[in-house]
Structure formats: C-alpha cells, structure tokens
Length: 482
Image (cartoon, rainbow, N blue to C red; front, side, top):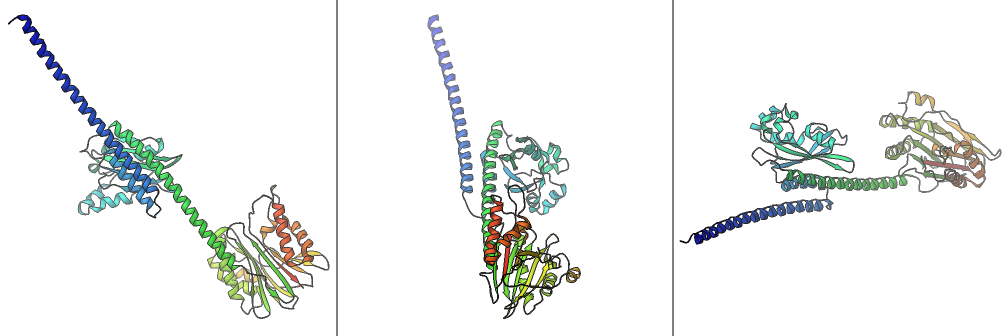
C-alpha cells in the first residue's frame, strides 16, 4: 500500500475517534447540565410550594392557625432542603427560653438527651418524643444561642462532637449534622429553625446552606406577620369586651334623676377610659327615704370597675330598712374587705334624705368632703365628717372612726358630692383645677339649681383642661333643697 494512503487512512481513523470522544464528552456534559437543570427546577418547585403553603396558612382565620403555620414551616423546610427532618423553637414571653413548637417525626434530637431518657425509651418508645416536645432550653444555649446572638445560620457537622452535648447520651447524636438559622422579624428575635440529617445521609452542601437561609428568612417573615395579626385580633377582642363592660356599667348607673318631694337631684359620671372606677347611685330605702351614694375606687380600668359593681351591690343590699349611713357602710366594709386587694380601697360618701325633711344624714368613708352651698350667705363650706376608706381595715378601726352627721339644708342650698377627678384635672401647664375653681363654679351656678351646677362644673373643667386628656374619672352629684 502506498505509504501516503496509509497515513491518510490512519489520520482519518484518529480523527473519527477524536470526534467520537468529543461527541461522547459533549453528550455527557449535556446530560450533566440537564440533570443540574432538573435539580434546580425541582428545588424551585419545592420552594414555590413552601411559599404557597405559607401564604395559604396566613390567610386562614381559624383558631388553629398558629399550629398549622408551625407545621407548615417545619415540614416545608425539610422538603425544600431535602433533609431527614426539621424543628422549630420559639422564644417565650421572657425571651429567656426557647420552647419547642413543632418537630418532624424523622428529625434526630437537636438538644442534649440525658442518658436516663434514652434508657427509658427502650421500653417506652414515646419517652423520647415526649421529652423533646416538653423540654425548653435556654436562649443562650449552644448552637441555638450562637445563631440568635450573631443573627447568622450555624452549621454543626456532628452533634456528638459539639461541646454543648458533652453531658448527653452521645450515641443518639452521633453523626447528626445540623443547620440552625435564627428567625428574626425586623429587630425582634423570634426563635430558631433547624434542619438535620442523620449519619446515613449525604453531607450538607453550600447550596443547602444558602437555600435554608432563604427558607428561614421567609419563615421569620410569616411568623412575624402571624404575630401582628394575632395581636391585632386580640386587641379587637379586648376592645369588644371593654365596650361590653362599659355598656354594663352604664346600665348600673341611674337611668334618670330621682324625684323626691322637697329636693331636686342631678348626677353625672364621665369615665376617663371605657370603664370607670367611680360611680354614683340613687335608690329607695323605703317609701319616704332615698339613699344617695358617690364612690371612687383607687386605680382605673377593669379592676376598678369590677370593685365598683361589687360595692354598689353590697351597699344596696345592706341599706334596706336602715336609716343610719354609718351602719350601712360598716356592714359594707366588713363584707368587701376580704375581697379587695391590699393596694386597692374605696372612698365613699353615703347620705340618706327624707321627703319634705330638710335634715340629711351623712357618713363619709374617706371620701372628698361634700361641699355645702348656703344660699343665704352665698358661701361654700366643706362637710368634714370623720371616716376612713373601705377596704383598708377589717372593721376594728373603721367602725370606731365612722359616724353619722346631720346636715340641715335651707331652701336654695345645694350639697355637692364629687370625686377627685374634678379638682385634680390638669391643663397643659400641669396646673390642677383645684378646690378654689370648684368653689367658684359651684357658687356661680348654684342659683340656677342642681342641674345647672353639674353642667357648669363639667364645662369649667373641660375649658380648663383644654386639649389635655382626662386622667381620672369625673363624678358629680348635686342635691338642691327646694
């Protein structure tokens, strides 16, 4: 054979072999790229499914929403990162403990398991699961604490080699690898989310780490929104309850001013909040006698309003057929004292008036002195009858101090009962309305009668306070002798 032909044939064969190798290599690269593309698509689908699940959970309104959200986060994290399991721990209200919320069944234990627990689990398999569900851990503990304090995910290749597990049963932690990510919403630390693999799984990759970081960020966002939603729902519920309490309290106040021959009577209650710690009351003692009460419970809001309701019932129950105000208040103090907190008390004034009788009987349990406007002298005098507030003493001191006082009203006279919310109302300069202004408002309006006195004082206080919010309940009762 011609040597040239032989060389040409050899060259052609080599070229074909090289071309075949290149084609095979390209085919392998194409398959590899396709596999990578498929893996990315699968990962994207997992992430989209996870985000969709979070969104679906957040729009639900049932009472189990929080539990469902926790389960969605944990199961979704395990699926997206393709791990054996995941676990969610959230900070308690103190911020000092991480409390388990949900852990997937196949997730290896992520906190130290005492040897005696693993021994018990041999005969009682539920022991380990119960321990993991019920055991909280310090917020500064080990990898959980590091993730929270640094704000960065932590990777532990083998839990049994971590110093935080030195007192644990290392056999159940052997070869367990974990990624722990902090859950932070805004500037608020919520807890941690962790994914884990046992020793038989492939090690975590950098891509796993990056994907899990995204999962944790989305989970924190979902949890933060759920917290805001739940807090808003709780606020709405409390507002509804307060509105109901306010309506009930308004029902307990007199519907209209009483009609007693020889007197004109008017009352007013203006709460500083939805519910009031003040109250006033009018009630018949018998066919000719009327009981009049004004009271102020220390404190504000719901606790004070509950005490006012109790006080109203007790005073009414003890007043039937009794014309001595001090006797009624002594009985009321005896009954109320055991149920009043040490930091609470009730200042109260109770008087009894009789139709067509100018003499009023009065007892004062530590309340602001009633103000007696004398029409003839056009002057105001404070009625300083003795007594201490209800709820301070079981009765030994209370019964010795309190006593009835008789007060005679002439035609045109007015007796004003008020709570300290009137004279202690403040303006923008921090000045109090004070007793002097109260005396002036009473003196100025008294000639126009009881109703005019109430309205005049209310207007004077509002004008004085201006834009300053009312800090205390305001209650007024005016009795005019005809």
